[in-house]
Amino acid sequence: MNKDRGFTLIELMVVILLIAAFVMIALPKIKTGTEINIKSAASSLTATIKYLYNEAVFKKNIYKLAFNIEENEYWIETLSGDEYVKSTDPYHRVRKLPNGVYFRDVVTERSIGRSTLDDDEEFILFLPTGFVEPAAIHLKTDDENKNYTLETKPYTGGTRVYNEYVELLRR
Picture 1: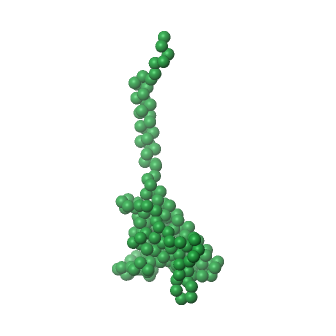
Picture 2: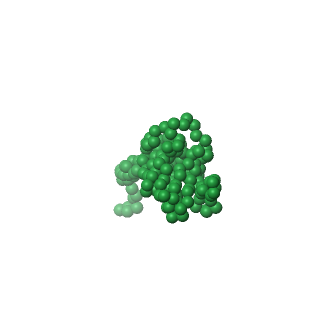
Picture 3: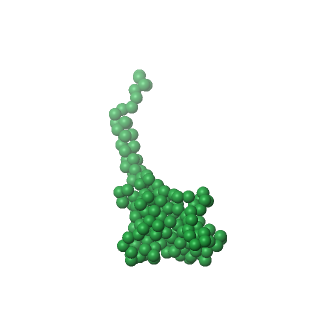
């Protein structure tokens, strides 16, 4: 009697079929890289907005979250005298959105009704009174399959995140 026979063809086919079924079930649940990146960008912007709200209230200063839509960058500026300056604080450095994620637009009450925006006009103000300028930040992916909208909450410094494009402030 030979005990070193190995697997039969039927046994191999059953194992391959089980692996294929597992992959077909699990694959749609695995998030793509750009989906992870857009969620990461939304999370980072949400944290920055809450941070600036707290900084403005506790340090009694006016802050500006500035955006460069073309370069997909954002940074923090502080009011010093009568002009905004970039801070030397390492947390206030220029940040770039992750690969495959872009700003679609940033809409504030200031931008409503204007047909074009200059790079230096796209910003959100944070006041020492605990007020955050109402704004909608729209993010998109390379293929525009994923859109996110971040809505600032004026009196709490919170952010509401939608996993779709939502037109909150009318242009």
